[in-house]
Image (tube, rainbow, N blue to C red; front, top):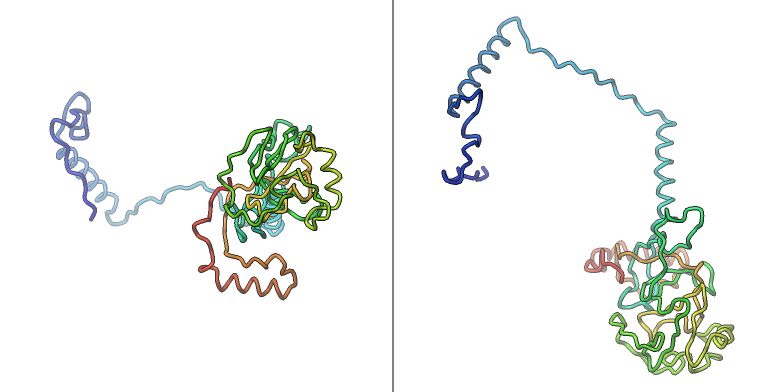
Length: 308
C-alpha cells in the first residue's frame, strides 16, 4: 500500500479547508457529515433493492456504430498511402550514407531523415506558405550530383553565390578569412597539391577531376580565388583527404538541392564495399548480414543524433 501523506501541522492548515464543511452559515464536524451522508445512502439502497424492485438502467441515446463498408475501407487506406507518399516526396525522405567522405559527421551506414521542404526553390504560387529559406554557410546538404543524374551526394556548403574560396595547405579561406572547422576529420592523408592548395594547381590529367571542370574553373578564378557564381554553391566533405567534392567536379546548381539531413534515425556498422553490391545475390547476402548482426552492429549511441 502506498504511503499517504500525513495531516498538515495545525499552523499550516487553511481554516477553510476540507476539515470543515461550510453550509448555510453553520459548521458541522467532518465525522457528522460522513455519517449523515452514509446513512442517507444506506436508506436509499434499502428502498431501491427491496423485493420486486430493481435499479433502473441508464438511458442512452447513442446510435449504433455503423459498420465500415468495403469502399470506405479502401478509401481510408488510399488516403493514408497518399498522405505518406506526399510526406516522403515533399517533406522528409530517408537516405543511407554509403561513403566516408563526411566522416566523422556522418559514417558509412548512417540512416538519416532529410528535410526536403525548406531548401526547395521558392515557388511563386505558394510563396509565403512554404517555410523556404536560403542555404547557409556550413550547412550539410543532400543534392543530386551535378555530373551524374540520379546519384545523391551529401556535402557541407562552404561557399554561396558571391563567395571567394581558396585552400592553402588544406585550410579553407572564404572571402580572405581562414575558417575554423572543428568538425573536420583529423586524418590529413598524403599531401596533394591540387586538393590542398585549390585552385592554385590545374586539375587537368587528374583521373578524379571531371574532364570539363578545369575549363569552367579557369573562367571563375580571380586573383587566385574561386568566385562562386549566382545560382550555385561550393561543397566539400568533412573528410577532406578522402572526399571527391566541388574541387573535383565543380559547382552545385541550386536546382539540384534536395534537403538538409535532420537527424540519424538508425546507424549500422556497414562494410565499406556494400555500396558496390548491386546484384540481387549481393543484396540478399547484405540483408542476411544485417538481420544476423542487427543488435551487435547497430551503433545505438548515434541514434537520434542531430546532423550539424
